[in-house]
Image 1 (cartoon, one colour):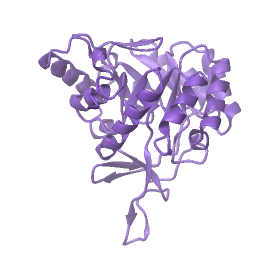
Image 2 (cartoon, helix red, strand yellow):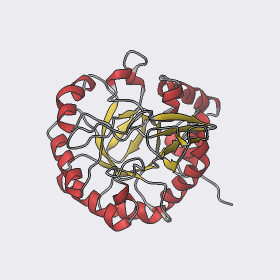
Image 3 (cartoon, one colour):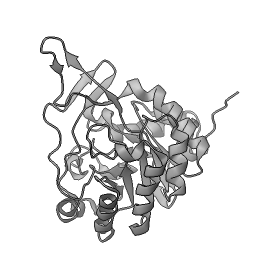
Image 4 (cartoon, one colour):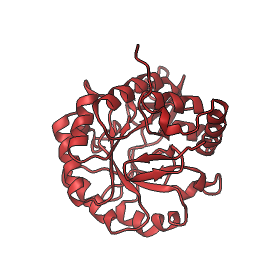
Length: 303
């Protein structure tokens, strides 16, 4: 049994990656699980300057998932390089920096700072956060503007570029092709879905923002379709993100075209979810005699 996967130039020991915004800067979870067991960790989104994020409360449960409006709170790229990245270097797990900005130039500038730091395998460009005005969504809803961001980052990046797409578009295949043609090396599909949760007693939102991003098992069937459509549109690897609770969910995503997955909401329920899923995936692949997990990618039988 071989769980290794290759996302272009990035090789992972297994396809389970902790998603940005759900796993802190990575080292905070080291006392809870073995970080070396994970295929990768995508750290909290990094901006050029520190951001305070959205008002509390930031999370609320939903019938089949979670609504969040964290607002991309982070310490800024310079402080991340100085204070957080050194703690991650001893681990074998691949570390990916999630990047966002208010302008195309800011995306490129964040990448420029990270280029001078050791210990990163790739960058994930967030052009899809629905919770804040500067979360990149303005770049992720039109192929032309998405291509501008990717091309600007590509000009300064020697490391691979992953592009995190929004599910809130009319044609995700067009967005995928634009990102790939502009220099993206892999695509993450997809970010959260804009949603609301209100309390009739207070007539207010249950979170600090009027709206937030819906994640969790409720979105998995929708995101499965998006992964399938994206994988048919491009030749670069697709990383599935949305509602994964079990190893079977991971394999389902592989069938429709994913080469790896990211785990988000499950970590809020169980901080050891990523490590548990790796162990469950090993058992499931053994049970079904899947000798190499990457051979399952794109094997969906449409007819």
